[in-house]
Image 1 (tube, helix red, strand yellow):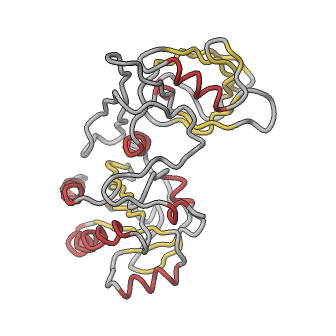
Image 2 (cartoon, rainbow, N blue to C red):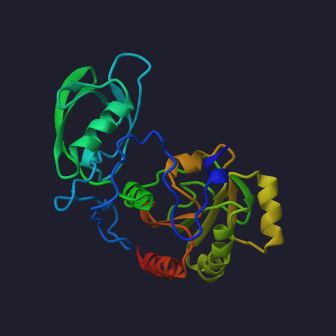
Length: 294
């Protein structure tokens, strides 16, 4: 069952449904850069917790067993995470943690958790068939929404996953969207919080489309179903179908509704999970500012 059909958020994000993100342990002691109008390309980071009771450590990578060879394959490195700050890369193989051989993602996550936030671990890696040792300063695990923000804000979208236009004016891809501020709304027609948020995004479309805003709703439902829903609910902004859930996988949204604000140059400037009036107001203020940027 696709992610979008399993999860939705009413006011706060649900737990991160990505079992592959081994090492995401520990819930307190996190400090993030302020959200909102970050400079283009800025990456929020977490700081290690150094005071109070011991907090499990967090590395900030996704892992899996490699099909061949040994160790543990890095399948994702979260932007701004401890691993990213020390140069751990996609497709690195972790073979030892503090000198102990690892062969399963749980070996790495267990060692990282046991070491604790504010401590360091030595990762022995294999990169391009060459051995490499990296010392990583561990942090406490952010919330799922904070991980989403860290990984997305400042990222440049050179393209979008393949989408099928279901209703509205389009377009649904870059480079056709270059030069426009894009508000991406990852939603489902059965999601109560999504339906509460939708009218506010419809109002933004009506108010700012002529000034350069594209509201792009993305759901994993079929184009015909989405077209009918849009007509029934007088939704006139762009709605696209992502039947393979590739957009949900690309953006790693922990829950829906998930919103991304993208500037005229394709850089993600802010993200939000769930529906709250205060965050809608913040999103609109950011859009107003981005529309004024060159």
